[in-house]
Image (tube, rainbow, N blue to C red; front, side):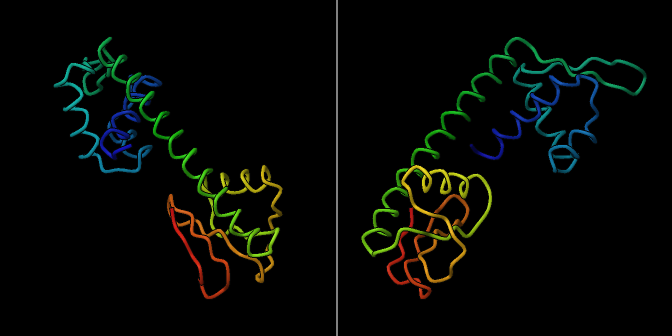
Length: 162
């Protein structure tokens, strides 16, 4: 999901949780500058997805319109579809890589990296009956962002990427 689209979804979700949230709090929760939050909010307001009402003298209340709710639903479905495509692509490629691992005479791998992609690698290894170890003598699945690189030997011979 593109950064802008993801931020819009996150903003709408946070506003839904707390309509009285400040732009500073939104910025903290999303890990962006207040100016970035302000820019996105102005765009959401201009598109009719969010309305602003004055709650108190200096406090604003953000209200998601019915169009905004429909927009958030579309963004959510899009995010889930993209995530599932990535999940299926990674699992398929890791299965191919595990076939290469077995063809090279191994039944175990190291997984180098953390996060969701590494978790998908672990699940695929379990499903395929391939042991996960820390042994430096076995091939490694190197998680680099959303890519998984097969390292058959320590010198990266025969490496392939998805």
